[in-house]
Length: 115
Ligand code: 5GP
Ligand code: ZN
Image 1 (cartoon, protein in one colour):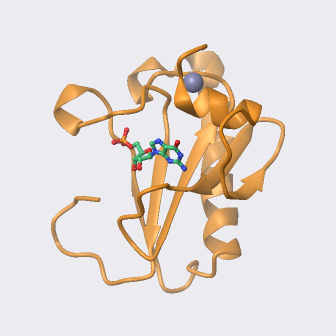
Image 2 (image 1 turned 45 degrees about the vertical axis):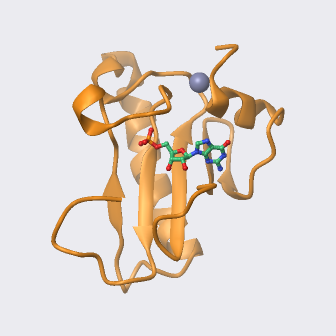
């Protein structure tokens, strides 16, 4: 996807602060953090959002879940906790049309699910 900002980050055309990377997944710090720790976890495959996951992508979803756990351990919040958000579609306010999971941590989260 040529005009996708996250595909550009994956290709290294836009710099990012990487937290974790393997052949299928990248995790990097959000440029505009909403919490002391704000990591974005994305598949390298361009998938628009959660509704666009096909059955052949479900294995990737398993890897994403494993990566969430790895990243939480790596940034030291596996015990203290974190919030995981994936905006999907217009009402959610999704801005980047490459599926991503916000891992928010490092402060007490309010009762409202916002980021
Ligand atoms: P959304 O609103 O689509 O769920 O979240 C998109 C997120 O991507 C936002 O939190 C925004 O700060 C982040 N973001 C947008 N462009 C860039 C970028 O070029 N680099 C990084 N690291 N984060 C970005
Ligand atoms: Zn993309």
